[in-house]
Image (cartoon, rainbow over all chains, first blue to last red; front, side):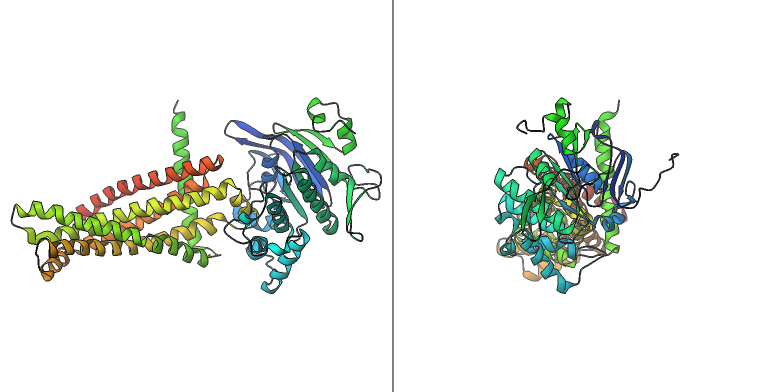
Length: 284
Length: 252
């Protein structure tokens, strides 16, 4: 390591520096660099197999990069042994593609899992039940406490997954294809929940998806706490989150492990790259 | 040139890494006592009926076969000795291991395999739990604890099966059979009869976990790793018993 590495500035939640990940001969990620700041929403678009999920798992240290560096909350997690990662990871919420729920335990136990099984920041036992209730009420599934994940529908499992991801109130939440395989109405409900979570807890979100509509919703709607529903934001701010009501949503498009686009929604829609515009519906 | 050796060598290396971590976790917190107890129930108590049946009938068969051979020398009375030695030294440990490999190496591999393909293992890591600590170590401890117990039960049930034949069909007296069986066993036999199941348990549980955690390729992959886990663990059981027998034969 000859080059001097400047630690990322405060406020940086997640930072990729020229990250490359290989599986055997195949490059799943190629020289990926970006930085996420507090309160930012980042939508990663890409076809199946473009490396979106790998990107997300690399961000958590579940996959080790073959080159480059990953910083999570300012800590370099690139070569940290697994045992020391648990502490940092507990500040990140994750929704896995199919929910990733443990099917041998009940919904309530699943949601309680991050609170009970962490080594540090453990929550007092008396608080766990109420926190679980709150999280499940948030996703409107408080009646499923004693059910098993296999008894739930796909959309409900996804919602339980969201409850589990946010129960510990992490400042950063990663969503892996939250709407994959769902009908459009359920998909919308899920995205509305994610937007609601973002705007009630002020979390930063990294959302990996194939659907442009998901990003559009995140970019153009805010949850109104007082009225209790989503409403469109007035005027679209730039990527830095300027503008009074802007969601500060950044779009990223991936193609075969390479980031081919990074910018705001307006820039995305104005793009002339034939691969990038495939994600943007023509009606607008 | 030797590229075809790459993947088996890498697999062996991965297996040793897994084994090392699983053993190291015995001495590290947190300990999941509930999971150990649950696995002991599944692996130990759950295997009892089939271990009973298999060992009982193998005792019966050995007695019947041996009585024919022994009658040529007029030594039918010595059948207890042969049953005891065969079972305690070899068949008890090996048959139990084959049963446990068939039941539990497959069970472990398919359970962990399904968890792997549905991202539950990743979820576990992401939520701050070491899957080796939570899944592999409890299964290893439970198997290592229960396998010798099962073997002791298998030895006894097998000798008892032999006794029924000796008493009812060969007309030996109760004390003749049991005294003969008891006196045939040396300290060396007991040690190898209890050391083997311990080693088998270690291999069976870790092979099951190893193939389970390596599963890829959806439901089909789960089936594949289950089959591989059973085949590989049974092959290892027979190779290890040959090796250990060689060592103990030299010792006596």
